[in-house]
Structures are given as C-alpha cells and as structure tokens.
Image (cartoon, rainbow over all chains, first blue to last red; front, side, top):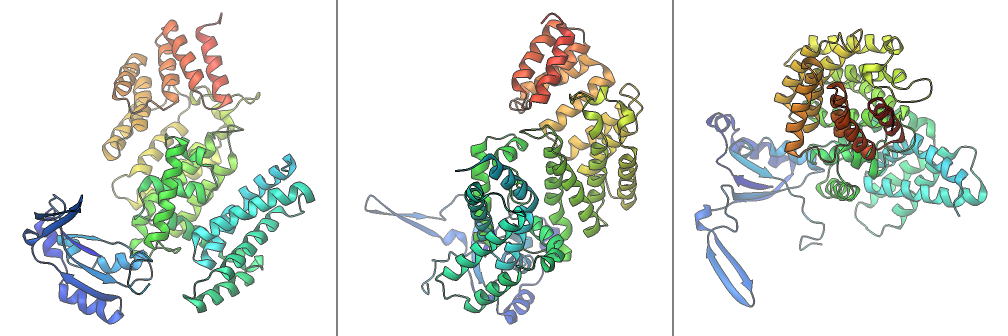
Amino acid sequence: MFVVGDPDHTQEDAAAAPDLEEWFSSVKPTGKYLQGVRLQEVEDATTIRVRSGQLLITDGPFTESKEWIAGFAILDCADLDEAIEIAARNPMAYEGRLELRPIHSMGGPDD
Amino acid sequence: MITDAAALAVTRAVRAERLRIVATLTRITGDWNLAEDCFQDAIERALDRWATDGVPDNPAAWITTAARNRALDVLRRRQTEHDKLEKVHTLAKLEESADRDSEAEQYGDDQLRLLFMCCHPALPLPGRVALTLKTVTGLSTREVARAFLVSEATMSQRLLRVRNKITNAGISFRTPPAHRLAERTAGVLSVVYLLFNEGYAATEGEPFRDELSLEAIRLADLLTELLPLDDEVHSLRALLCFQNARRAARVDADGELVTMEEQDRARWDTVQIASGLDSLILARAIGGSPGYYRLQAEIAALHATALDAASTDWGGIVAHFDALIDLHSSPVIALNRAIAVGFRDGPDAGLALLADLEADGDLESYPLLPAIRADFLRRANRPEEATAAYRQAISAASTEAERRLLLRKLHEVAPLD
C-alpha cells in the first residue's frame, strides 16, 4: 500500500480522517500489517539513472506531479477486498490517496 | 473432424451450461482462470469426441464432467507445495461436486458471486461489463465489441487486461460485504441492461435472441430480491419489462421488423407493462433523486402507456432525456433525445440536432445514425436526400432484418427503385 500525498481534498475531508494511532491499534493485532515506513519530505528526494553507462543524478522525485509518495505499508491480506477495507480506515485515504498494489509472486528474497 | 451435429450440440450445451459450470468451478477452486480454461478445454474435447462417437444423450452433463475432470487433472499436476492442505481440500470438493443435485442449490449464489467479481469496482467499468457479458452470458468477443462500439481486437485486449487484473490484484469470488453492496450495484445493473439489449437486437443469426433478454430480466428479478431497497434495481427491472412487452409487436406476420411508431399496440404485453409499472412505482416510493435507470424507465413508461405515436407525451420524454443528459451525457442518449425532439417539434428540429451530433463525430461508428436521419428526411418531405440516407443506412445495417426494414422504407420514398 503506497501512501500518497495529495493536496486535492477539502478541510472537511481532513477533519473526518480517523486517528492514525487508532488505525495501527486496530490493524496490528490482526497480523495483517507487516511493516511500513514514512518518508521524509519529497523536497529531499534524489533521483538517479544510469544511461549509456553514465550515472545521472537529479534533485527531486522521479515524477513531476502534485501527488507524491509519502510512505508505504506492507499488508498481508486474503484478497483485494480485505486490503480495501483496511486502507479505507487509514487517515491518508481522507487526506491523500492510497494505492494498493499486489506484491509480485517472484518479488521477494524468500521466493 | 467437426460435424455440424456435434457443433450444434456443443453450441446448445454451452448456452445452457456455461455459467453454471464456470461459476461452480470458480467457487470450488477459487481460481477463475482455471475454471475458464477447463471449460474451454471441455468444449474442445466435446467437439472432437462427438464428431466421431456421436452426441451423448445429455451433452450438458458430458461437458460438466469433462470440465471438472480437467480441473482435477490440472490441480493434481500442479507442482507447488504451497497450500498443500488447501489443495487436498479443493480436490475433495471437486470430487463431491459430481453430485449435481447438491450443486443446484448453490447455483444462484454462485451466479451472483461471479457477477460481483466481474463487476468489481477495481476493474475499469467498460472492462467489467465486457467481462460479464463474455463470462457470465457467453457472448462472443465480437458481440461484446459491438455492444461497446469498438473493434473486436480492442475488445480482446480489454478482456485480457481485465482477466489479468482479477488474478494479479486478488479480486475474490464472493459477494461484497453489506456496506459495500450498493456501490457494487451500478456495474452489475449496466451489465444486465446491456445483456438485455444484446438479446433484443443480436448481432448474428436470428434478430432476436429471446433467451438473452429473458436471462437479463431473470437477473433483474434476482437483484430486486438481493437489493430490495435500491431504487435503481427496481427501475432497471421496470425498464426491461416495458421494452420486453413490445417484443411480439416488433415483428409482423412475415417476420419483418416493425418500428415502434408503426407497431400494433394491441400486441404489446399488458401484463408485462403492468409489472413494469409496479416496479417503477416501487422505485419512486423508495425515493431519492431519479438515477440513470429511473429516468429511462420513466421514458419507457410514457411510450408503454401511450395509445399511439402521435399522442405520446413527447414533451415529457424530452424533459426526462434532458435530466438524463445532465446525469450521464453520452452520444447515444443525445441521439435518442434528438429523435424525441423531432417528434415533439417536427423533423427539421430533429435534423438540426442530428447535424450537431454528426459534427461532434462521436457517433461515426453508430450504424443507426444514417437510418434516423433518413426517417427525418422522409418526414420532412425531402425524398431525394432521404433516398441517399436510406442507401447509406442499408450499407451500414448489421442484421439482415434491419436491412430489409430499411429497404422497405427506401421504397416508400423512391418507389421506382
């Protein structure tokens, strides 16, 4: 679950956002929250590429957009609907956006 | 070698059993792609076997057994050690499912689960509807493509992407939780409506595939039981009843198509119209501002209760179309509004609106546009232009019955042709 900052929401939306600690305390005991991180501000991002053997380093995020990746959490859910229900209770669903992406079956060091 | 008899028997068995087999296998294995593949495999075996051995007494049962056995084979051969217990459990359930009586009870639920899976909001809306038409009703990709005014190649790609997303994103075969039920309904309703329309004017073979429309009405009935407090569900049912009530009057004694204007309204099914009105009254009573299907049902009700085309409340119909466009603007709705305006204000007003729509270019691939223009030109007493428009419409007609109807109209304006 990518946590995305998104200025496109109203003050009412933000006011209606549930408490983050409540979200943690409801999700963690279920064992479905494996891990998560909150990232520093997007101003501190550095983007790198290697092209034609050259390392290119640029200031800022990989994409120019008004939304930015603010963090992520790894959830262990039976299916998409379960992930949607958990994400819909996270405050960032109200003040930002949450992008749910399945982990690729060949995507981890354990595979 | 594939004989005609075997091919025909397969076609019939597929029509009747496809949904049951795919839904049951999906529930048991939890793997929808596996269910689809096994069903397809069973169809291929049937074509092969029946051509040499003859068609069995019960073709549907033969295909069900072949699909289930294929699923057993595939699962047994799967190399993954992952979820071994679950696999054993699934195999046991598959073996049990040979008892068709116990499966029959689950059928209704399975069908709904499959509908909700195909209509999951995480899928793009066009993909949801396309997938349900393809999977649940077994329409060909070409027929689904026509329903969406896109090419067959585009539709194949769309179906492939949607199927992949279901597998990769973990969209489950289950009914949504109660608090999500309402928001999952819109996609299911549009599927049912498209299904009905496909049955009302089918692409290939006979012009009307009654069973498709009846299946759509049956699904609408089921949805009214599942979601009795959703006014749009009742509105959709009303709409389908009104349209289906005209079915018998849509062809004359020679099997030729008859336009609504010229239909013998004594042949409209008053029982179905009354049933539609009951549903519409229920929908109004549930309240809320009228949605997409309510407005269409209101329009259909005005047609269904009018004595003839001339005394139809065209003003009321245009007003409902205006509300519909505010809610859900689409080229086809704009076209139907133009027709209603043409009846209310005269053919010149209709032609002016059609010219605007053609200038927008959204309706280029819509085969009825030249036919509608031709009718307005005929009413406006402009026979030369009407003749040219009918010729264009005839070359764009997608069924033989439509083509013959247009030819008759052409001969009305150009009798020497």
